Amino acid sequence: RMIRFPSAFAARGLRPDVVHFTYYDPRRLTDFPGVPKVVTIHDMVPELLPAALVDGQPHMAKRAYVDHADAIICVSEATRRDLFEVWGEITDIPVIVTGHATSERFHAGVKPAWLGFEYLLYVGSRDHYKNFPTLLTAYARSWAPKAGVRLVAVGGGDFTAEERAQAEALGVADVVVQTTVAEAELPGYYRGAAAFIFPSLSEGFGIPVLEAMSVGTPTVLSDITVFREVAADAAMFFTPDDADDLVTCIDRLLGDPPLRDRLRAAGLARATEFSWETTAHTTADLYRQLVETHS
Image 1 (tube, rainbow, N blue to C red):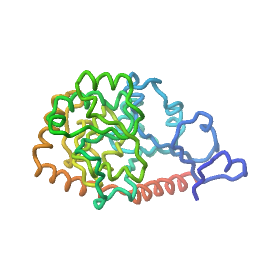
Image 2: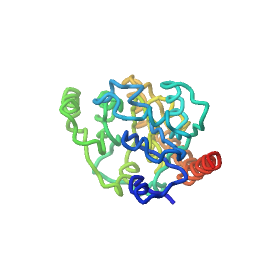
Image 3: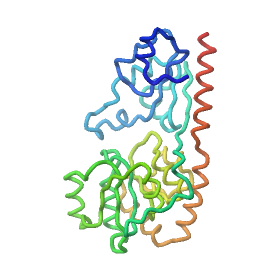
Image 4: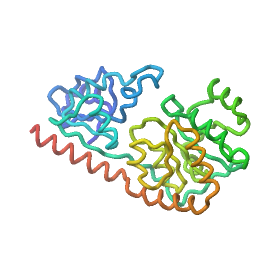
């Protein structure tokens, strides 16, 4: 049985077999002494790129949780390597990888959204490490604006003053759109896009990549290790800080229907290799291992 509120669980005088932390709240670190602990590492972005986040390293007591853990789950092999790079290899406890998956809303039969124009899609926050300015620059230099293909950013809040100023300076302010959509609408936005573009400098997994592939949207990604791990050969890749390289990808994709078809089919096939069922089974096996070890 899973209990989501450990403080209430403890208050009833109950003792779990395993405690799994998915957040790094310092106040919870010492809960349930003597009970085996699992911690999930979602990414190492604050530690690898501290200057990229306004608050520096907002992951609070992450290092303390790692030090107190009896087992660690990383959401990708790339994140596991990042963890070892930052804090050294961990060999005395299990450190396993359980990938993410998508919800059942994301599938090949999703009806495309029609916004009244063709568009390239970006999804999620636009924090500095997400590298959105490079996408803006590449979009403006590409054939897309001339062909009437807009750039749509879903989520992440309104464009900042800096983003609006950049779009104005590049001459694309009228064809770059920010919007927020209901969760149920998001698959259609992916499916309706000419391409999904994700230019991040660093990620722990990159669920939007899997969401795009799951509905058959051609995908263009920054060439970072985790995106190679997730997408394999089902995406186009560009050098993260090279806007001209991204321009080449955008122009090639828009001008090559067979390439779009190949990426669509490859993405659908690749997405089937990720499932929450597999993640759940792998996690449950780790719980059983810990219970046996500590019994």
